[in-house]
Image (tube, rainbow, N blue to C red; front, top):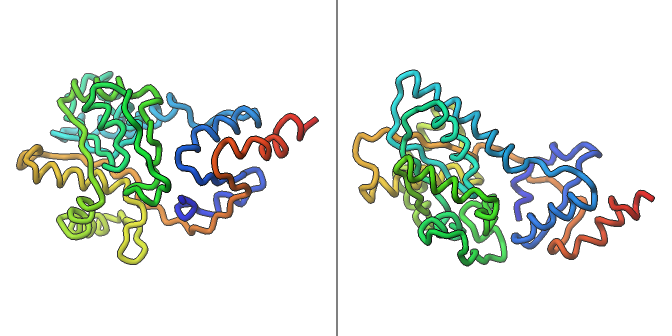
Length: 269
């Protein structure tokens, strides 16, 4: 489903192998299978993802030290590696913590549902294709399994923040027909071009956060004259959509034999 989001130039090297899997619930299992059979290291691991987000945290810390103030920081989340890294930097440097607002798509809002329930033991979302999702790249139905839920809940409590959701209808109303249209023009004038295919926004993850801001302003949760920092994570890439997978599988279990034949012990002895 997400092959159109890829740039074929990345896979021009013979050392790179692109594998496609149809079942959106299988990538994590398939990655573990490849990791074991091919004896390779998974990149990135969870601590690396959090460390990568600390770079963003350092940038925000510089802004705060320079005199900027923010009542809220808003970001689209899946497993919440981003805010955990950002707020880790702010806490270690004793910075005042803006309230964090995490935005998830309503069709696959595991962290939001777990936060509301107070437990990670919730029923995962079920969908047959990522084309059913507002953000097709956020297809993991159980991101809380990465072990980040407690850290996210802690930072929400410390910062006075919360989680919210945006569905497809709300996104269209707020971004495509509402205040988001003017926001897109402002971004464009600042050199940030959100990729479109005709009138359709190609990748909506970054703008989900913006839609969440407008939703909470309308709800009165974000008060007038508040300064809000929107983390625009995703939506500016312009891939050619011509990447061709070397292998295709329905799910992880159907991949074992082919992976063993190509890269496993039987193929190298």
